[in-house]
Length: 99
Image (tube, rainbow, N blue to C red; front, side, top):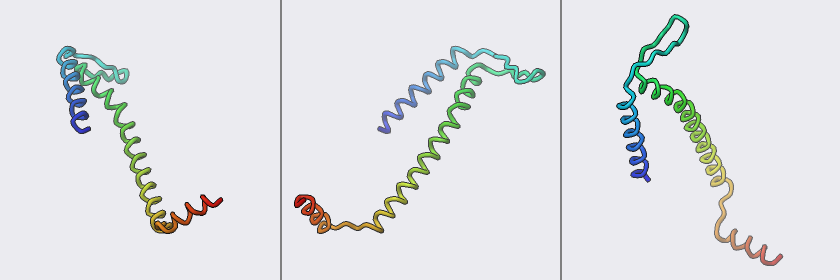
């Protein structure tokens, strides 16, 4: 799986490098009425991409972290309160078969 992820990142970087080489032109970006930013087009595209990616990535990581904490807490609670042995499981199976 790690090799597939590495290949995917390699393809993304290669596509970004090809895009940057083909579109290396200056662009004027008017931020406010008196403020004009002169930059290259690939820098503008990469900045816009990261502006959308980083907040969603942070939300994903925090949600995953919170859910892993909940799962660990539930597993700890389950292990501490309900220790089922094979005799308990066999007794429950026999009770279900009898009824």
